[in-house]
Length: 66
Image (spheres, helix red, strand yellow):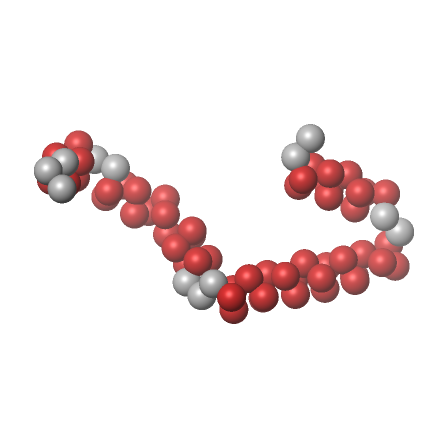
């Protein structure tokens, strides 16, 4: 079972009063990650859009000699 599935399973049975703390911790980790690796989130979000331009036969041909 993947980590995300395990987390979701635990959250389902976790007492409601503590869920705010769980959410706060998740937000803290997201903020920490964005500060440690600036631009990573933007790169991930733009990957699918840029793939339309990059993942073409013409693009492969242009770079095959490098």
